[in-house]
Image 1 (tube, one colour):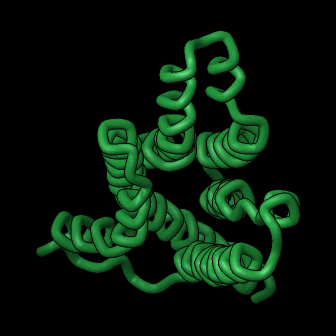
Image 2 (cartoon, one colour):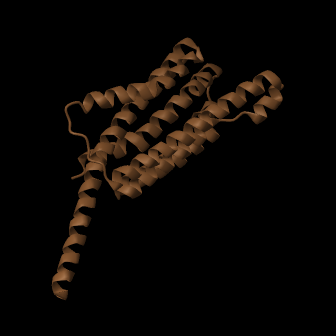
Image 3 (tube, helix red, strand yellow):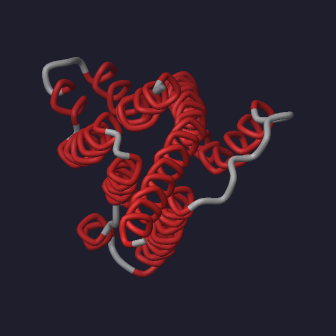
Length: 223
């Protein structure tokens, strides 16, 4: 009787382990598709906006970034049409909560930073404004890198973990210390201005490739 109970317990544990592993694979493939689409859309939009800014000199094109969630959601739903949804599971729930947390903190910080900067523009001198200016993009890079890394740990994907770390920390330092701005010091004034306009687009495109497109592709190919 005791041996039968032990066998039953072992069998139950094996079944649960297999179900969790199968769920992790299903969530990984769906997450891979989402990351891949988000990465390609972000890279394309970043380079398009940078090019438009260089050609026209008008920063209004940066407003196109606000359309990114809608574009990514629309393309993702189009590609998933006719496919059966991934069943709800513990792994999928953890991944969703991680990205929901990033969305809440990232969006809240971005809105606060923009409102604070607008307030400083209208109430303080340029010298004070330049010192108190909040740069939300570098913080959002760190938050997204953390979220990608956490997702990698949940899905047991080393590729995702390292891409999140490299993309988040690398993007933060590039944006903070001005990667292309350093190169522009040895260029002409016109070239330097063009590089500065291109800098943000390059940062976003590189981060999107390292942190979204590349790990997404690896997860899609994962067996």
